[in-house]
Image 1 (cartoon, one colour):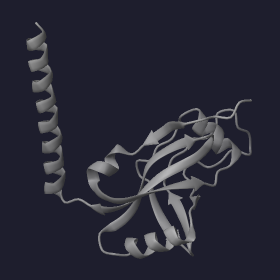
Image 2 (cartoon, one colour):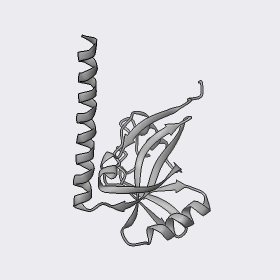
Image 3 (cartoon, helix red, strand yellow):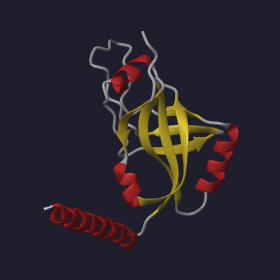
Image 4 (spheres, one colour):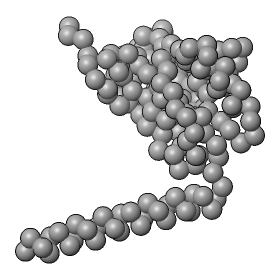
Length: 159
């Protein structure tokens, strides 16, 4: 079988970008069981409630939902088990010190396969206030309206 190349997105946490200011991002490997990998290859996962906790010098991914593999037997995994993240010691130490500051947390942004290996993109984030969320939404709407106006003007010029 030919080796996979490139990046294949499995799940993305769009809500994290809405709820948090993203300060720094990291790419990590995951320690998975066989049925988890097969379930991920089917493109089924949810990062909605996920978070990263550093415990005993190791990074752990909590509350990420990887559904049970449909053809799995008694060796199937539990859907919301905690999973170990593979990171360099310096990165873990840096994340641990920064995440202990008030208002900072570590959230997963995306889950994907990169060259056949499961990876997760995590971010050091700071929670947004309600007015920050409204401001971000307003900017997004303004950008959309401006893009629509530009494309409408281009259409008028062609006609």
